[in-house]
Length: 480
Ligand SMILES: Cc1ncc(COP(=O)(O)O)c(C=O)c1O
View 1 (cartoon, rainbow, N blue to C red):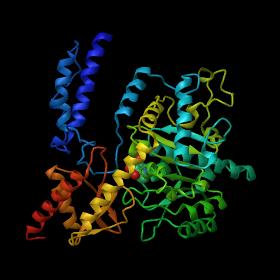
View 2: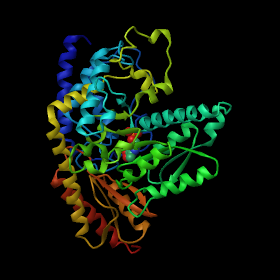
View 3: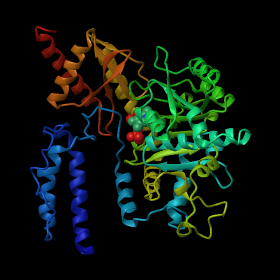
View 4: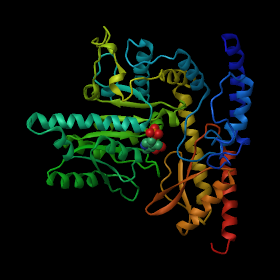
């Protein structure tokens, strides 16, 4: 393919994408395929001779689309949102074309510098405390990670390194291995599985803190566990708070937890993977109060901020903590400007070496929507969740299972878990809408998350009609 053909095919591809997204609601949101479906549709070996572009593009509809779960369908209500917008898609094209691997400032100065400035812009949109803003003289700053899972792991590893150094400063005879075996990390029992996974990878014990009736961790619950562990000779070193838990979008009380962590010399990381985007709206910003006590804070613009995957924003209070934990300096990666105070080498802030020019997506989205446009998107989706909540509340057969604060509604049919499992099965088998469940206080609960940028009130009304129809059919069965 030469540049002339690329121009032609590129235009066709943009048309295909625009058609796909404009007409996405005509497609069943969830695919009707069995495991292994794709292997039977394509050859077992790569072609020896080149094939035509026409043949490949034909196969997109034949092979790929039947097995796609359409995350951007207005009838997709599962998990949490995956962001999507045209400016981000265009920026992603440019990112791919530039194709730099921006691990250091020298490896592509624009890639590094735009990222630092975009994380500052976003930090200011969230009204983060000054110590998270890099500016030209700050000690903190932001970085784009691939996912919230990586951000949590980075924070845990940085905290582990800091804790080991702290203990060794007064007890140099203690080995790193011994200290690590005495460290204890904490997170909510409602935290995302990636937090527990970070502890597994980091080789430290992690204890789950029980939540209150609102699925929130409060200060006293953590305090009790920390005191028990200290009395047993262990070293509490890390707490991962969640703002917007995955099951029910609950918020840990960081105004209590933060001061406790600071007093106990524990690193507080905040995982706000989904809900973080909403903090750009002044009405939601109070939920972030207490962030001033955190050592690191993360959320995913690729969930709710109109920036397509991947783009997970992590800020640290002291960048020396994170850089100091992972620094490697082979000669081939060094460059003459690396000691300049104005230079960030992001390779020290992450696990992989390679990194894409992801800040372009933020730059395009922030400029084309403006803060007001992104706020409008968040507010619209919260309003749609409230609309769905009212429909559920008006039907006596159902109950709401957690306070609806953002774009997630947790609800269930009154009655047994089995009844709700069967209802969900019916809903998803029918493929008109797609939902996933969660467990809250031992109950099987249906999660209805507003996900797609294309979802409007009519889709909410249609989804509810569908749920009530499935409920009607279920309740006709003698066993229910
Ligand atoms: C609270 C929370 N943390 C972490 C994650 C994991 O996000 P990622 O896929 O970016 O690792 C999720 C995913 O939904 C989440 O809801």
